[in-house]
Every structure is written in C-alpha cells, then in structure tokens.
Image 1 (cartoon, rainbow, N blue to C red):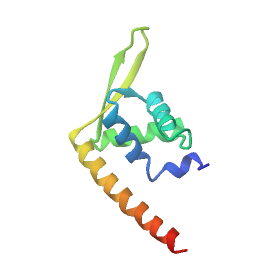
Image 2: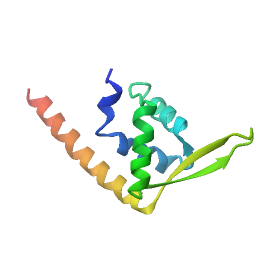
Image 3: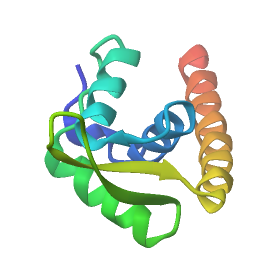
Image 4: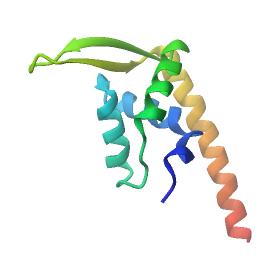
Length: 109
C-alpha cells in the first residue's frame, strides 16, 4: 500500500477530479471519496489535504464557501472553477503521459 505522502504528486489531480464529479463537497467527504473510489488503496490525510485545498484555492482552481448544514454545523465546501477545469485537463494529460511511460518501461523490463 502506498504511504499517504506518495499521493503528493497526484493529490491536485485527484481532488480536482473528485470535485468535478461531485461539486460542493467538504474536506472530509473529499478524503472519503478518494478512499472509496480507489477501493481504499489511496488514503489522504488531513495534514496533506487541507494545505492542498488552501493552495488550490489561492491558485484560483477551486472556490470555497461556508454553509450551515441541517444539523446546524458549519462546513466549508469546495467547487472547481473554470481555471480549475483547465488545470484538471492539464493534470490529466500529464498523468496519462507519465503512466503510459511507466507502463512502457515495465513491459520492457
């Protein structure tokens, strides 16, 4: 199993993809979605996710807003912006190129 910090290079891609499919999620729901969609192979720690969300918000890739849930608790939810959609496309393209190259090397070895 990969260590949580092994996601560092792909965390932006994963978060942007999750939010593009499921807008208006809060941080814990993003972590849960990554775990669920990866069949629990990938795990994201709060200490990695929240700084990444903050950085992506500063870059203009996502926007955040506070809401009050039915139970009265406040939650910060996130959505992908137009710039985030462009970034997601770039990240996906880069990821496809890298994984394709790694697969070619693995097949040769």
